[in-house]
Image (cartoon, rainbow, N blue to C red; front, side):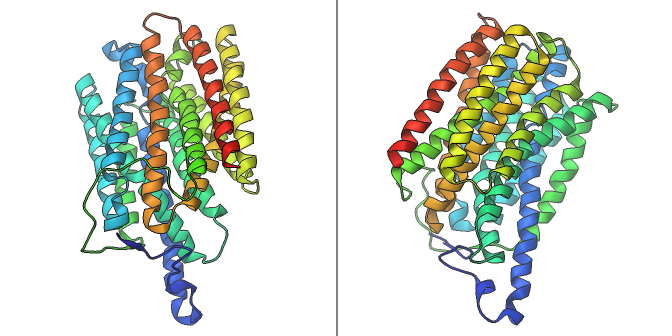
Length: 417
């Protein structure tokens, strides 16, 4: 298996005593850290560009809420397929050899979005987007960890945890914000957002190309096998607790990137695309802010804050739906976003610390795979349930099930203690 060249156990030459000769190498890794963070954020932002546009597709082509959730589910299925087949391969062949084709897939999806608004093309474009994102998530996270270590050997991992989770979660919020405003005031609401992000994805390809590689490719590789979800990454109970936390966190994010904009436009009578994008951005922005402000908290502290805030936010969200009050609905979304952000940051940091260097991408891919099940299954369940029940009733049941899941996360974490 490949050997990571930028890990705490195996410092790169940037950490040796001959500083005069090795400072340029450390500087290259520091610049590469910023470039990969940009590419990571762009990739995740592109994945949520359609979120504020779904009501436009619904009005143009007569899509139902159920159809929107199917489109969303196809994207998540693509992510999971990619995580299973390729999420761990960068441990063997190198980070850049996975990141470059991953961004290329997203660029292809952007071109498909520009060609047609028909349902088959939309489904294909979302599937390809998911395939690209699945390759990016674990690989970019591992790459950032190694670039950070090479740039600042012996330093705390807080910078890595913050940047990686903000690029991931913050990117998911940036996409709807940019797309919503471009759709609201642009001349072609179903084309302009994809044109802008196609340019950003091209810039991301250039950024990755100029970033140092952190994994030495070995020509004698282990036999290929799909990603396996294993809990034996240093601490079984700790890994299971992190995976359950990831599932719970992304369940909230899945709600806001699938059916929430349609509910705001329909039941709350606010059809503005800019508003839809702003609401989604507020949720993910709150998550990113929570990740920044909790940097000094222990992992247990982040987890508990996340559990309490997410539970309180989901309950407030349901109250806002029952009362048809946009302000209460938005407040609940922001509080739930704070909780989900803190909880997900704790999960990523736990898994990155537990895994040995040669299996870090594999461990993270397993975490993201379980987390994306949380992004997918509840959203699809909500879409199916709305065929026979009101959105308010469905959301009430969703909140109840999520509270049970959050309690389960705490139980698993206590078992680890």
